[in-house]
Image (tube, rainbow, N blue to C red):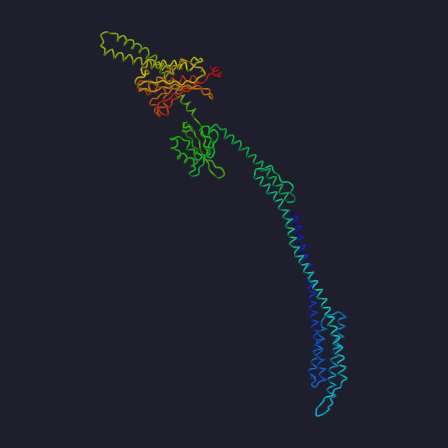
Amino acid sequence: MKKKIFIALIAACLFALIGGAILLVLIDRAASNYDELVMLHQVEILRQQLLLEIRKVGADLSSLTTEHPQSADAVDNHVTVMDNVVKSCSGCHHSEIVTEKINDLQRHTNEYGRAVEKAFSSAASGLVREVKRGSRVQQRRPGDQEQARLIGDSLVGKVDAIIVLTKKKLADTTQEAALISYRTKIIVVMVVAAGPVLIALFGFLASRSLTKPIRTLVGAARKLKGGSLDHRITGLKDEFAELAVAFNDMAASLKDNLTAVEESEGRYRHLFDSAADAIFILDVEGDRAGKILQANRAAAEMHGYPVEELLNMNINGLNSADSALGFSSRMQRILRGQWIRAELNHRRKDGTIFPVEIGAGLFEVGGRKYILDIDRDITERKLAEESLQRAQQIRTSAELATGMAHEIKNPLAGIKLSIEMLLEEQQLSEDNKTVIRKVIDEIKRIEKLMKGLLSFARPPKPHLAHTDVHEVLEAVIGLALHDRPSLQGGAGSIHLVKVFEQSLPTILADPMQLKQVFMNLLLNAVDAMPGGGTITVKTSFEPSSRNILIDISDTGSGIDASVLPQMFKPFYTTKPKGTGLGLAISKRLIEDHGGTIQIENNAERGATVRICLPEVTSERIMSV
């Protein structure tokens, strides 16, 4: 391309030089013609002036025949002027022929001047006075005058001939100059017009040579911008070919780098999305502090929100009410560069609260700061800790129960026997017998407490069998509510509603232990409604989890929210004479069957206990 441009510039310079030379030659030629025209006009003027002077001298000669001849001085002056005019004609450069003619004209002029002067001299010396009739008449000699007149006429003829020739030459020269001027004008117009045409042609060729490769490069750059990294430039020449090679190398390098970045990003994205812990990327800018910018799949599953919905939330919106109180202080610590760890409570979309362990700190990318927040659901760990604590309590209870069994059971039996024998004494008054009966009841209560404690500490191993839950419930309902006057529709009556799902699968369970659990729950429901109410027993089956659900609900006053977490703990009771072991034993028996049990308040009033037991499967039979 540089070579082509250089050649084009040289051609343009040569064209300018040649055109300029032609214009100079034409202008010089035209100037020469115009100079010649000017000279011819000057010659014509001189010859006209010569003719005029000759005629003046002729007029002086003719005045000799008049009464008032011209004076000799005037004639001499006119002859001198005529001679000077002729001499001025010989001052220019002429050809030999013209010079010879001018010299001849000068000789005739000089001769004419001498003849005129001679005629005037003769006239002055040969004056004849003749007085006739009283007048004076001057008589002149005609010979010299006639000779001078002949010479003058010949001179005038020659000058006229020269003037005619000069006019003809002037006309020819003028025509030739006009033709040369016209041709010069045409050539100048052609040269001037050819300049823009050549410039336009050069511009077109240069534009075509430049714009086409540039369009190709621009199109390739746009395709590259659009993500077509496999596009390559071909067909360019000269320096553009080198540029195309560099562009193609850049595209290949960019593709390799982008592929490496995508692979790296894919690995990190896979790690980000497949991490078991919830990972959040948070904003730290002003009012947007805590805004969720990115969240992985585990974060969405853990909190029950779609990822898209999480991206429109602030991380503080996932905290429970108590955890949200310390949000500002935690953010301040993070902004000071601390990596914080804490155990908080988060809230799922459905409102349930669960414990999390968080680790959060600052990191910087591209000059902008963000917060990395990693949250781990520690519900299982908390349950494990509670299980461990419960196991320790059970162990303590077992040890306590064993000790009490040895230290209290036998003495208590002796006391009971002695008091029963005392009750048979006839001498005792009825009031004393009433007191003794209360003592015996308390002893029986202690025995029941000891029996429950031993059952909780060392429950018997379940004897599993294929069990129909409905049959167990029917038997328990009959026992739990037998001999209850309130069922007869009187004051404080209790209504029983059974909602049993048809074709409920059988489960692998110990029927006696299930009866113990159901009996305990039904009696608790009755105790929760001293003024009467409704007990609803509902069964259902979850195909997704293959679990059987048993719900026992009452319409009592419900349970205080602060008490709910304590309901299944050993020795915790809300009854004046309760042992606090009924629900704890029920929970342990259900868990021994591979199920779960939980209690919650109803939306309107009362509470519901839900038991979840697994369906009989081949895997469960093999495990048993």
